[in-house]
Amino acid sequence: MNFDFSDDQKNLKEQARRFLSEKAGTKATRRVLDNETVSFDQDLWRSVAEMGWLGVSIPEAHGGLGLGRLELCVLAEELGRALAPIPYSSTVYFLAEALMLAGGEQQKAALLPKIVSGDCIGCFAMSEGPGAASPANIASTFENGTLTGAKIPVTDGDCASHAVVLAKEGAGLSLVLVDLGQPGVSRTVLKTVDPSRGHAKLEFRAVKAERLGAMGQGWELAEAVLDRAAVLLAFEQLGGSQACLEMAMDYAKNRYAFSRPIGSFQAIKHKLADMYVAIEVARSNAYYGAWALSTEAGELPFAAAASRAAASDAYYLCAKENIQTHGGMGFTWDVDCHLFYRRAKLLAVQAGSPAVWKEKLVRSLERRNVA
Image (tube, rainbow, N blue to C red; front, side, top):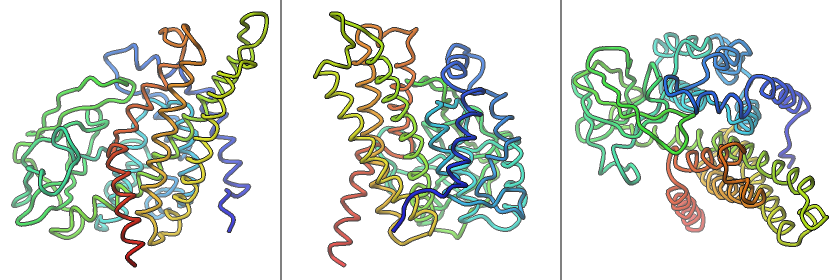
């Protein structure tokens, strides 16, 4: 079985890398990081919309390109490599996927074209505090078409126009769609390790909302959305990991100590080799996840958990060892190592921590063994 991307998909990857090298990169990340008045690069967001990237997997009937999830995986890897400071994942991996999975035709017709044009920014709100979200700790309520409660932290909740929220309805849970521009919604901006990706606490006081999917199916739908997003986030982490390895290799080749490149020392060689191995493990799992996602295979929950766990471990290792390879310079503000370390730590807990995904992986393996 061939898990590699097609020639067209590889061409898309090359074009995306060229575009992002000009429009994004660490300079764009630093502009957002240094400016407390903005939470994302609006110029880059408009450019990405003009390139059609926001609608890669959205059907043509709703203004998208209708290409598929594999092309989305390709773009996710390049966005992660470039540290793109835009709410792409929250909008495309979460809001758009939730709409295509559970939205009604009117909901899709109303929002999917706005996602494609960049006029709609999304976020996905499950957590209500420390610890992993579960059916037992969701307190927000959806009753008679109104939502009441609070969600914290919400990735890109500071700039989103719409949110998909998991809330109690009757004896079960439901996914609901909320317009964040209406009265009764309040936002509190949160400080995180990576300010180039905004976070907020969202509070809802009897605000109008629409259910996505059937009543009581919220948890199952949320898990399905998370499985889809996990694969795409794994590709972002893969791109960041590869960028860290290349940074470390370049520095190791050009930094001299005792009249020889530091890359010739065994300790540095071991670091680079460990980074390479971790990336290859993550890549194989991510490709497996991409196959499961693109074919809607029944193995998707297992593949998503495996790809997410491997990619999280790889990105953290590569970001950490990149700093170590740069030595004393690696810890300074002027060197870009910390930007990748920040993003590695942040992505690791978006949509569930590594511990959560490893637990899901174990449960999936147990179910497969029983079957």
